[in-house]
Length: 251
Image (cartoon, rainbow, N blue to C red; front, side, top):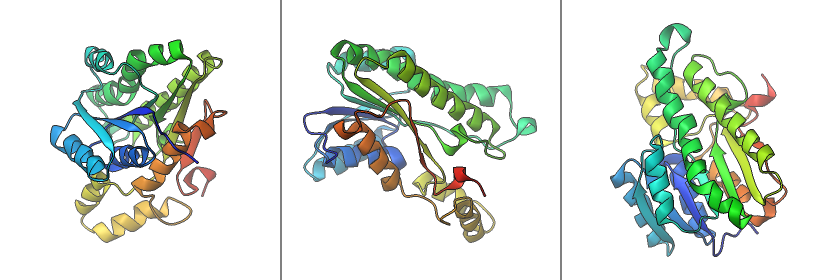
């Protein structure tokens, strides 16, 4: 079950963390992978990891906020079966600590990014009447997260984008779904925790927001993406899959 043999998948932000884990698990399931990232060194490392395990992968450098760059990449990939819009950035601050420029910066990457990639790749999927698009949203796309105003706004937009795409193209054979992780123990999160005066307490505080008392691993999020990419999820579209240890259920 959950095989991706003879499928081609593209994962943005695949140089580390959740994106790298998705690229690797897709390759392990038989897919040919396009690893996409702004960081050439990190993206190339993901490609080498996949190839070291016998998988097939290519790297492309891309700033997802640039529409022309997304369209140019689509011109290099004649057939794409799975598109994973994972690239994203964050910001800490409430209304008083958020500038308009902060909001614009998150919108450019977190919202325009998935929009640009969908504009570039979905038309060919619609023409073939086949494909799976997976957008990485967040717990912050379903409920508000304290002191994450711009981030919460952007991730609510990702959820809205996903649902609108699923509704507009519901009878085409192309599926659109979102994954909404809670706290995930990625290299980025670990680095931010290390900056706190008491990293151990900061780690406990972050983990405690989730009902099971721990953060998710990138591989656990990737497992959900694998299901959504697979043919076994043929009846799943317009859904937001929570991978949050129960956070969204309430406290």
